[in-house]
Image (cartoon, rainbow, N blue to C red; front, top):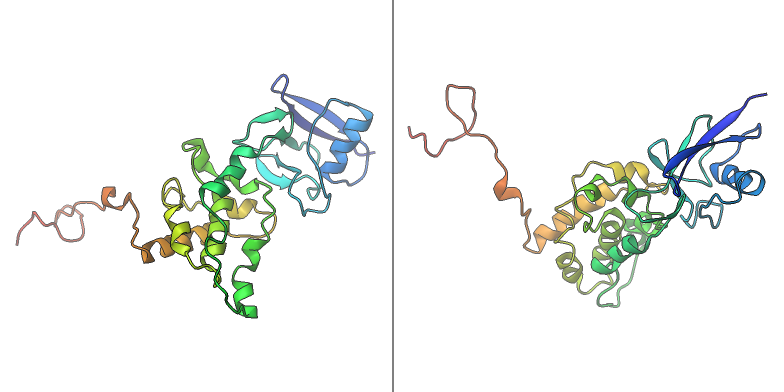
Length: 246
């Protein structure tokens, strides 16, 4: 009989604890429920719909964000809570701070304007609307390690969704509110896109928002500080040196 063991980081001791599971394929959520009902009643985690719709059960497995109700357990899996969230207990985290990013980014219709939407219009933002606020992209984003005030992937994806809505009469208001700790702070590493269980591409949405920002007169605040190298016309440099003369 095959023995499957998983390790869960417990919050009380901030140390790993190994649990043995019964034989047979199962989801991580099923495994956690089994452990809680038969082995360790103190194990704490979050769950909801059990169908990858609500996003409540998101955790990290082997360093990657997953929905516990969708992930199939493998022997040796290491289970941890989401990153950059206060841990309430074990795998259960407080999501209030991440949800606040939606308010800071004003990611909703600012000024409703009557408009006739075509099927093509609906398709433009259909994928972004599928966001289930599981916080997987938030947890995967390396920017939070250095800037906890970053608006983050799902807030910026939601902001993009409304800036391209034909019914939005004040898209500039949204764009104005995503400049500080927003579109220009993203490294475009793509970790958020890899983590999204719904196939949303926040990296591309943020790239498009940068284009929207430029349309409204903004530019990358770090551009002027970038060093493109100083050519030396003989030492291997390229380009024009304004101080070199002819």
